Length: 412
Image (cartoon, rainbow, N blue to C red):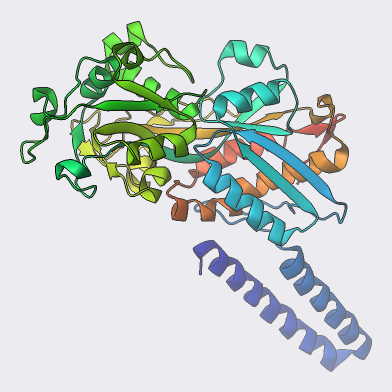
């Protein structure tokens, strides 16, 4: 049983025991009061169990009360955007539907660029992006706010199985080597710059095919953000963005693919390929996963722990009015250097969206409250790190500022 559920159930049991004892006292004194006490007991227990989620018990947090959805009115909500968090968001939609059948949430993983475009044009109810929006992007979408929803890592993947190197073998990389590969300066796996990082491996004399995203992508943003942070050449010639001009395409050693699934699939089918994807896509395709040298000089694999370490080292004190965060190349001995938050994009005043009504606005706000609380328990199984408590608290403040025609959608 999940720790939060265990604690929650224990609270309910203690509550019921306390109320039962009081009911017995009332029964011995006054029959009428006994009947009232029993009715109250039943109402409290039913409300706590069926209404649920009156208490959100996150690690190290206080109780924060808000019922996710109480209306029987059918609500259909549409979101679109990043493929990076798609497995988790889609898991959330299924779990939430099982709890609240009247709320249907559909999420279309079209990439961060597409999500930003569609929420800016107000053709979806919410967007998702792994890239924190720029000032100009926010100015083009007046009233749009962003909130972190989960943490993930960008894995460096490769396929050298046909050359005798198992996908269970972790190859070491540095930011400089990765930049040189995607610039097109390193084109062979046995290049001395790679071989010196892997003295116990006999790397093959085989061409490197550098696979990258062909669509606007927050995963690309995180990858290029990292390369810009550690390699001055990359920063000055390519930079960081959801979509960049890939030098390897000019040298003929690069190939584009759509979505995390597309990059993973291309690496699977291309001997000698290297790529960058969300960790769950690399694991799902049984690809090789590289260890990347971090700011402390250690080669670190992307795991829940090392991703969370990066967040703990780099997040600082979040500002609820601006939750755009950068955690690449974080300090710490065991911080994974290509870690990132991923974000939900919503309008603070939801009535500005043409397709929005009050019921849908309430349904979306309460779903997002659930996602950053109880929804976080589904993250680890999909290799996402649950949000740290300071980010949950900042998200709470942002969600409590959401309105429909000036009325708050989340109240306490």
